[in-house]
Image (cartoon, rainbow, N blue to C red; front, top):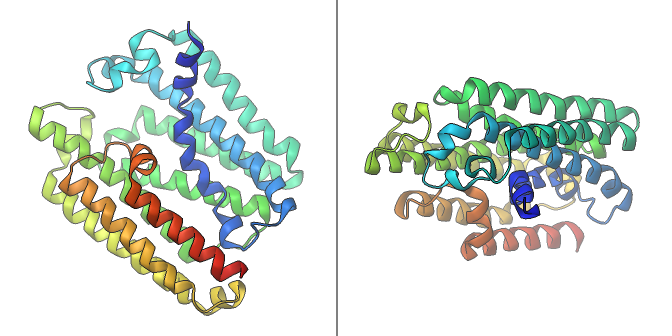
Length: 294
């Protein structure tokens, strides 16, 4: 079998989601702290490996359903490029490595981080087996996974996480998950294609209102975070709120992609190819760095 088939099985492009593990370093103003990076990178690697292990399990579990899907049928296991036993073996190896890395590299705190990563794996196994069939609960489980990423980054570095950042992370993940579900609803209503069993519990008006509501709350949470007295004191600047402009623009653009273009099936691909959102993220990052480091 081609090595590219096994690489695709791991979905390395999805590791972009694990950047949430690194966020505490950014928000904590520790980008130039080498020791901080040496502690957070093992957690990032471990979370990436565990995420790939989850994808392996998901592909094995859903192999028959994927073969009937217009896009998912090209996945390595569904297409027959990677056998089921091989996928299971890779899953076991990745999950063991992910659980061991924090313990070996982060000392006493490594055990807690490893427990969170294993908990992430267990949560996703339950999700694949049962929870993904329940509307709304499924996207809440996905969003919880992003909060666990953030917590791992905070624990690895010892950086305090504001409750507003935790809420913002959950809401942003919830926003992206519902946008992805909306794409499935569009396929269901236009083509009658049931890509997941709970899709019949959603419709376009509900999705549009939900995305607008969550997007609004996420923006408010971020603005409140930027003007909190403890945040202003810790970051040493009262101008962090200016970065909200980029957050608002990025969320509005994503709403446009989801609702107007009906092309929100893969948040990762959108982030990789959409120049407007990339410009917003770059502007947000640069402005944040200027405020924090200059």
